[in-house]
Image 1 (cartoon, rainbow, N blue to C red):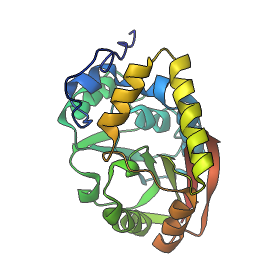
Image 2: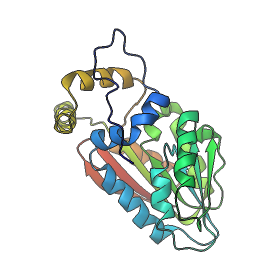
Image 3: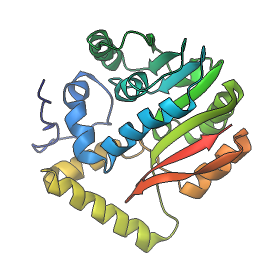
Length: 244
């Protein structure tokens, strides 16, 4: 199936509303994220590789903010441990409805997948060997992030792993501006116009709230993870491995 091209911000809008994961976004989401997030295919591939390494028998895996289930499928296709299962969670009804169709069409039925429509803060993490937050935490209110990561750490078994992928901010303002400029150039190279970039940025402002890598490292350490560091970074997008 060919991805539908993202043209949501291609025409001038009288008023740019706040970004939300509604049906319009669901329809173009694979194209949107591929053209907007540098390194996204690499991160998905590595989530599969890490699932093969870290998922243990009879344990649970969680894809928190699963959207259309890309990380869920990356795990599912690479899990080798017997009796493992995946729980995908998203609070967007449109995302979950489409994800259910995608998961139902997938042939790797030996690893069961359950999808839950609810806030990721409302799901109980239990007997987990792997948890994925793939560009999800950035949409959670900053004052709720400590509690969420502490709950994840509590629900992970010893030796379990959290993959946290995020858009990040930089304390050095010239470097922050450079990374922003280079990200916009990345989007232009992928066919987005300056109008699309500007309108999308206005829509997502105060919806997606990035933090620095140091802030993420500190929070993860305080949550109870014994090993925390970046495994991937491209411009202002990064992914962290945190081991319980």
